[in-house]
Amino acid sequence: MAEKKTTTKKTTTKKTTGTTKKLSVTLDKETYALLEEYLAEFGFSKDEFVKKAIMEKISRDKISSMIDDMIKL
Image (cartoon, rainbow, N blue to C red):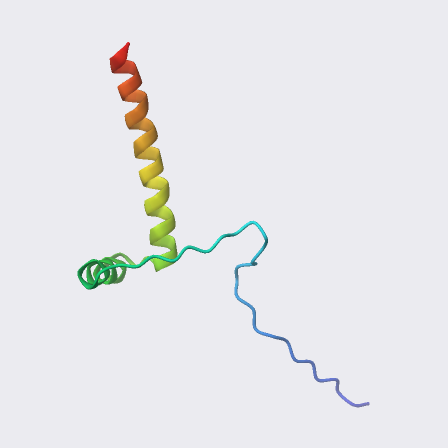
């Protein structure tokens, strides 16, 4: 009985679906160097860092807006 050899394509752990979007960002050398240092120090990937930074900024702005609305009353 002959063994059947199967080959599979190596896939990434993330599945790409139609619900994802790609973002491209251009940074000056100094900013990029700071980013690289930060990522090395704290162990984030660029993808993780950008996602976290975006969510933190949105959250801060929402809180700030709520505070502004309360002060206007």
